[in-house]
Image (cartoon, rainbow, N blue to C red):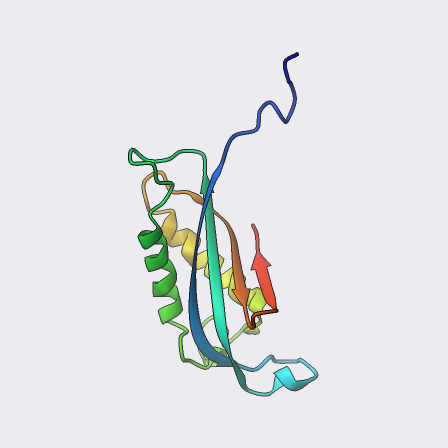
Length: 136
């Protein structure tokens, strides 16, 4: 019996993820509670890309290239007070907004590569137990 429908059209996808850490401070504007006061976190960020095609040596996207993209973005916020850094000088520096910011910037940079994979998600951890994920 042959399969038809969505399951038959499913494409095998590969995913690659890298993580980096940084430290920064922030204060949540309009928040009622401790987080309205300036405080800091040791953040962790994971970027995940996916695609159906591997290159000639069997890679979806080189880990070192993806780490370079993430490290470059993190360099702009590491050991800074996020409320003073664009775009967080106008939008709240919540983990959710940070995940969207990292997605937008990383997508722009990764898309410049030939046969660029698609970024499927960015996760930002404020602590070991709390995170926010942006998935387009």
